[in-house]
Image 1 (tube, rainbow, N blue to C red):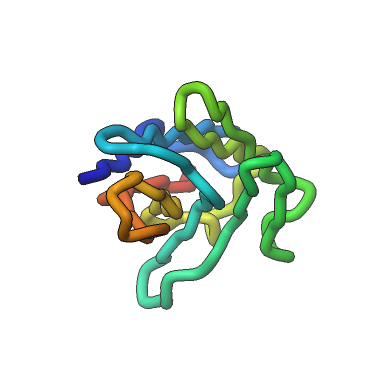
Image 2 (cartoon, one colour):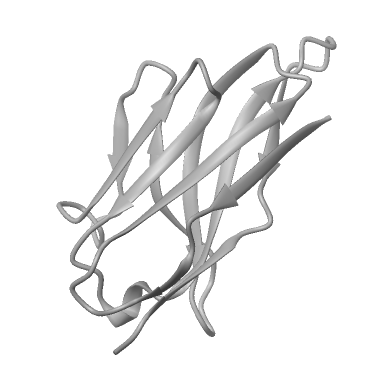
Length: 121
C-alpha cells in the first residue's frame, strides 16, 4: 500500500506565497507522474500542475507563471511553490501520484487526503 501525505496548507494573504509538499511512502518500486489538483468551494476538482519523473512540468493556464512544481525523486516527494496568490486560489489541494509497487499490478493511481489553502485578507 502507498500513502500520500500533504503538508503546508493554511491561511495566506492575497499576493502572498505558500509552499506545499507531498511525500509518498509505503511499498514503492517506481513513481511516475506526480501532480497537484485542487477543488475550490462549489467547484470541480481541477489539475493545477504535474511533473514527470524526468522533471518535465505542466501547468494549468490559471497558475502558469505564479506556481512552480518540483520533485525530489530520492525522497518520493513533490512540491508546489505558490506565489502571487489570489482569493480564487482558495481550495483544498490534493496530491496525486502514479506508483508501481513492484507487486505485478503495474502503475496505480494514489491520492492524498488534501490540504486546505485559504487566500484571504
